[in-house]
Length: 214
Image (cartoon, rainbow, N blue to C red; front, side, top):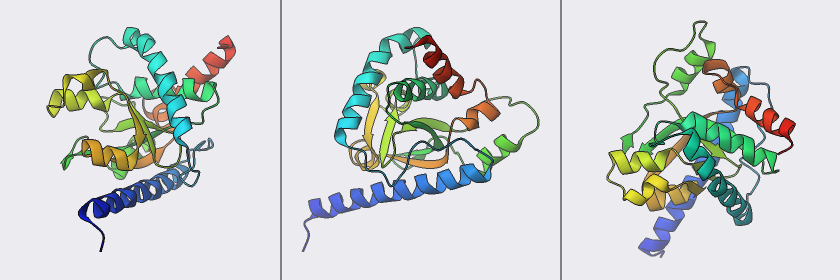
């Protein structure tokens, strides 16, 4: 008979499988919305811990620059953060894409994001007004997550330690659930979401950096 700890580990592994399934569905739904750019990432491709470490090093190096771009609180800046991570990771040859979705924090629906709501935004003929009910993070494929906007929200809204203000989540979906009680739910994948609903297009930054030879 498995021990309670083994049962917990099995449950977390099941969650990583669920995340991969949701990511695959999100890629399909993005295609249905007319997103034509390659998804870049794949839920089937296994991403090694070495790749995660390389991503961690790069995002850590970017933190100083981003602190000048986003003064103070980062918890409401997922678009800017994911755009910069997307561009810089791909620039150095680490495939990455922006994932749009929802997050459940210890049972609380943090952003109240739905696929239907995102579809309406993409199909809207009038410019966006107000706040977008969506969270954006980076995925390298597999069950990976890179997110600098959520940790400070946890510090501000959920009594997480002050150290979360300076933290970047880089890890796997099961780890986020097990360590932080945070469940990521992918709904769409691709830079075209922001390009269509709330420019600038993240691809513009990547092309700009390529042009600068950085």
